[in-house]
Amino acid sequence: MSSIAFSFKLERGDFQLNAEAQLPGTGVTALFGTSGSGKTSLLRCIAGLEQMGRGRIEINGECWQDSARGLFLPSHQRALGYVFQEALLFPHLRVKANLEYGWQRTPANKRKGDSNHICDILGIGELLQRYPHQLSGGEKQRVAVGRALLNSPQLLLMDEPMAALDRARKAEIMPYLERLHAEADIPILYVTHDLEELARIADHLVLIEKGQILKQGPLTDMLASIDLPIAKDEDAGAIIKTQITQHDDEYHLTHLQFCGGEILVSRIKRAVGEPLNIRIHARDISLALQPPGESSILNVVQATVTEMVDQGAGRFMVRLDAGGTPLLARITHKSQSRLGLEAGMPVYAQIKSVAVSI
Amino acid sequence: MESADISALWVTLRLALTTTLILLLLGTPLAWWLSQTQSRIKTVIEALVALPLVLPPTVLGFYLLIALAPGGIIGGFSAHGLAFSFTGLVIGSVLYSLPFVVQPLQNAFGSINRLHLEAASTLRASPLDRFFSIVLPLSRPGFITAATLGFAHTVGEFGVVLMIGGNIPGETQVLSIAIYDHVEALEYAQAHWLSGGLLLFSFIILFLVYRQNNRWAHS
Image (cartoon, rainbow over all chains, first blue to last red; front, side, top):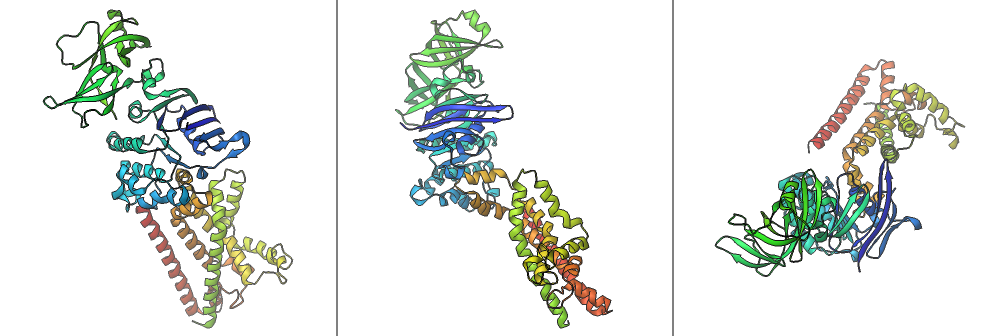
């Protein structure tokens, strides 16, 4: 079983990093936490950029650092790719030379990947002859991702690669990252403090708080729990695995089947039979004890209350079970007491909107 | 031009080129160290490097004369000492022009984004590799400035040369000294030629450097 195992200690002023974990050696693992929680410091320790960081790390059986044995491979000897918050392209080199920087320094027998294919995935084939100052923010960041991938890494580290981009640029780059996720055969550690972003890209989630790893687990489980700090996020909400069963051309809708029932969403350009993950924000679910009458809301799912947490400030988070699929609903304290909600009660969950991710 | 003037021109160019070359070789690692270190002696070294900017050339020349004399701490390495020799002139010029090379280089190195170097290190570049593939090309304007100022400043040197080099035609007589001789001998025509030449040369050099730096600043 491939895995990433590490434990790091780093002290700087009154900040202390003390993180130990074993993470999946495949797929995208998101490191999530507020700013100042130590996500970036952890990533820098893994990359060998923090010489003061003590500890050990092993990537799929290869040891990069073991302070107890006096082993510390400097960054340039660790086969990794690092995408920083800023693109940090070398300004004196054209895009092509930037992309080839790591490739040229990789021994020929260790080179992986194909630059044409990577340029294709990232949509940067047209930019090769340009200088970095001739690129937009989104283009720069895509080239930076390509440069890291062409370094033939065994591990790709991404430190909030979209933090410096505005909404439009994020929307532009996200599909490329999703394609990368689908095609990359190396583990990716992705630092973010944006729940929306990680819900679209991650498979596994690690929560970091005050320099320590609070909890980790598969993304769907973590997003469906109500007692973690992420449940308090405005964008909290569970992921549901569905299958496309039917397209309705008259009303421009697509029917999605999941084990708790059926959900209708705006027409999706995917074939019938394909699996599709959707996310329903807790704020977009309202609860009723009776089947709602005539309403503009299309999606109503029968479910059972399994758990409730008082989040303070008059807000309640309710966890539901819809035929084995967990759902989160955020309601007011007043609604909770008016409905007399208790664990075990059957309810009707009205879904106001659905976010479709990949 | 008289043949003495031509040989003075030749000595001057040889001296300035040799000095610039040596200064670039010595100044680059020194400036890099100064730009990166957090050592406590950094300030001491910086002050030492800057000394020739404020010292009267005669002070520097006086101590150099003692050091280069037979049996002096530098001159002791040579049988007859190094004062009044071309080698002695080179040593003096290197010290005298040191800040003009080290300071532009240190500024250029200091303005390089450390994150670019970290990015390069995650792309398998060793420290030496990073220096040659990232630091050097990004410091190009600093190198041009350093080399030009070092060269031009050595050409314009007078006091130190007079103290340690004397006035041996073909060996240690440089242009600035030749001009002094002409004026002393009331040969104003020759003095005009050489002075005007040096003035024009210095202006053109500085103009070219500033123009190039402005162009880079805009691109």
